[in-house]
Image 1: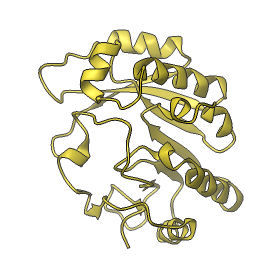
Image 2: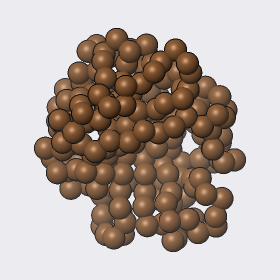
Image 3: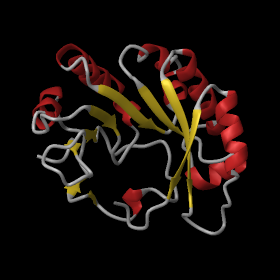
Image 4: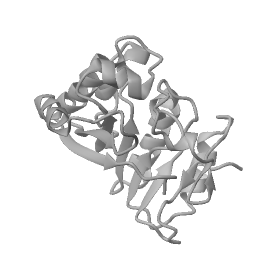
Amino acid sequence: MYTLVYSITGEKNPDTVYVNLTNACTNSCVFCLRCQKDDVCGAEMWHDDNYTLEDIINQFKEFPSAKNVVFCGYGEPFLKKDMMKSFCEYLRKNYPDIKIRVNTNGHANAIYKTNVAEEFKTLLDEASVSLNSDNAQEYNEICNPKIENAYEEVKNFIKACSDAGIKVTASVVTGFDTSHKINEDECKKIAESLGAGFRNREFITNGY
């Protein structure tokens, strides 16, 4: 069975586990870890989406000390929205103290033509949304999005999360090449104007 739930600490009983729902994505970011390697801390990330909710639950149960669950893998979690929702509902029912976060490219509302943030407002505690730039042109160069008007859609999703009461952080990645000098100050201002926190995720060569 391929990896659906994994840890990045190497510990037998980690506080945080990650859920690798899909390898599909509506971005092709120049800094993406999946362009460099096939695994995260030894866990094989590539799979064909041919799994069930029970498969996720069984792998999750291998980490009985988990206090945090993060939807983050080699694809965009919201592309498996229904499966993501089902697992969130399972966690809320059976592990009510666990904190749930998604790391997302922020395209969900554009993909489904509905307010996905509102749909998940009781299921997610936090969302980390990849803003990645302070302008659309640079965003397109870095992220190579497959949807139209992607940068504005990302900002709209950040605002939607904030409005839904989900704690949201807008992130950028810096240090991945010399051709893009991300304006962190402007990105932080944009994040704050949308009701979000801000985080700079420094690029790690060859990943974890």
